[in-house]
Length: 347
Image (cartoon, rainbow, N blue to C red):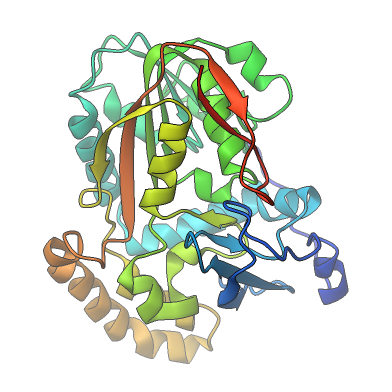
């Protein structure tokens, strides 16, 4: 496996150059009623830079403000950082638990008509397509990811084709247009610079009447308010947007889709309390980390003990939408004033 280059040291001044000018309005609805939701530095590696998430007082969209530039996104998405994040997650969820989650998700989606081709966006090492093959044995799975992990997934035969980048990478949509029956996005939109553009691109690579599966973090989770900057899904600096369920559902319907399923139960991951403890002591003195081990174990046990209740209450930390795409062309109509991208509708 290729070795990623070491991550260079970045000063505070240099980190500031990774940020765009601050927005004074919501990128989703254009409202100027913004308030700070949480401020945090890089919680895993403590590299220089301070990051803030703002919340819109009208539509509840939560977004990084100021947002990372393209250069900043490339820096914080280095493969080395990706592996660091995965190693941290592995301490909270065992590989067996991750596989069990992927298998449970694929089982729930097995109600979909048998697709000929499926694109998993933000696939990483393609563990979901690997699990889904059990329920979709005649489906060809491809993967798309901005990191080299997707190419490794092809070598390990988890997927058939690898596409590196984003759906909005120049030329990507044209190359993949109308090629897939299903497109899935698991925890991908949060890290996309423009979620609306990603959704439009997803519809473009789907065949008419295809299905779009979107799973994202729920910023309305009660754990977000309870844990503040120690809530792992805030994920600074890589998380750019957190969309409430009502916003994403309305956007899909505006694009002409029919939302078939809204699931706020099964996507919940029981790691909120244990992740908060782990983040709080991640860079503490080794002696303090050692004494925190019992607290981490207790927090993990509480996460799993409370999970049956959490996933059925406002404490659920994620949701999943399954939508059927339109069968007619879409016409673009103007977006709300100040919003970043125009909306679309069925012609």
